[in-house]
Length: 252
Image 1 (cartoon, rainbow, N blue to C red):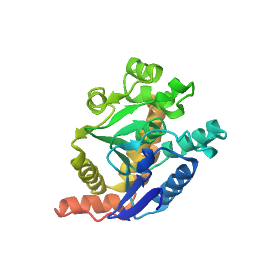
Image 2 (tube, rainbow, N blue to C red):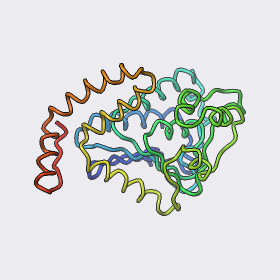
Image 3 (cartoon, rainbow, N blue to C red):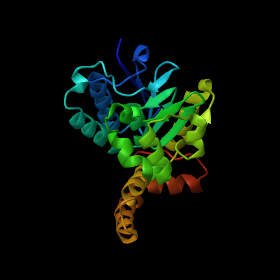
Image 4 (cartoon, one colour):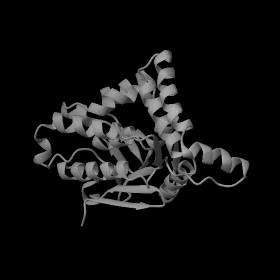
């Protein structure tokens, strides 16, 4: 049985960590398979949105597999590359979080653009309890929620519930477990109804704009907008609007 399930359907890539007996903890081999799936997702012009989840109802990903001896070799290098790849994805990604979302799982969820949580989900970074450091959460969490709340999560290592994650703006919404994947798919389909080039430009502006001055951001906007506005898809979007029909995007 594969430890990662990957399929593509109707412009959507489905990526599921598949080690439910181990709470979908991240082994080095699972990270390699996840990396391979992400590369394929990014390179497939017919796929526009990705959904990441974990199999079973107990865990999205409960962190690194501490019994995986390979994963304990040069963990700083491994986590650095792992976080860099997740953060560099240009297409929209949705995390459908079921159960534990800790450590390495927290990294995956934070790297996604939209987070939808089951009512049973919980989030956190217990690394500090082991005197290890959560790379991506330490870098990214304070960009997503107030700094003091981020610091408390990082310093205490305590888990927060799905409801608390929603209250502080860490997740987009909380749904019953049976509605988790349907909610993620509904969101993905809405995104697919919009121009894919424009969506990717928006994502780049949001991510890079965090560290830019206004003038730098406007220069980036000008470069990205020029490419988008000169595309076939923009002409199609305007034509479809005037003709009162759904647009047919070609991503070019």
